[in-house]
Image (cartoon, rainbow, N blue to C red; front, side, top):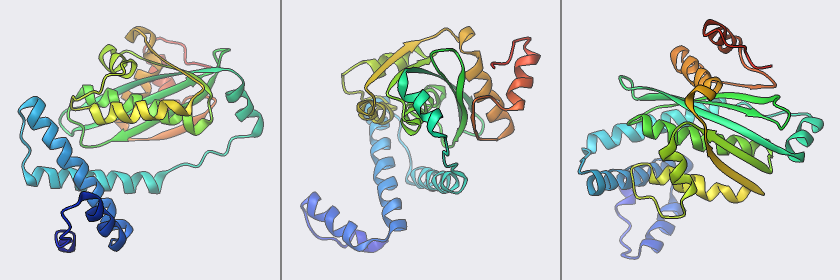
Length: 248
């Protein structure tokens, strides 16, 4: 990709226009991820006094690209009935989210469960993430997945609930977030306009047990899933071991 460095324009706009005019999809994907992680490393240095090596940045880029490709291959298309979509659009839905984090592998899983106003499950989902720095980042990604899930379902009015007070406060704030998870928070803020109404709320961990169990079991088994109107058997069995009634 040395041709990228041969763009001689000193104007960043013309430089990017030239690069995007010459590159193919794969090259531009690497370029965008590279710029993103370089900016991420800059923020870590400025705000946390942590410096990433070029080798570490390259590894993070490769891991993230691999995750994108895996997501593309395993992506499930939503084929909901018209009546199911009408249920979503009529009233308010609630999404509970939580994250499970493995420090040894730097991987996490987002656990999501969507309820309608009558307390019925609309969707449960588990999403895996790699190259995660800490539990705080894992929670932020889980929040983002909750927002994206609501958009994909066509929900108009949503309440997003989790047990991470710090992440919730950042989502509620209009101040630009300059922490390590600032890019994730901005992504969440940018997607809020997709909803007619959206509310971020805190829920104690004891009342967030379903999303927590989904995330924990998904990370333990290395499995992602998307299921309408219920939860997988592995989650049901885990809840029964905790002597809790699985949700209907």
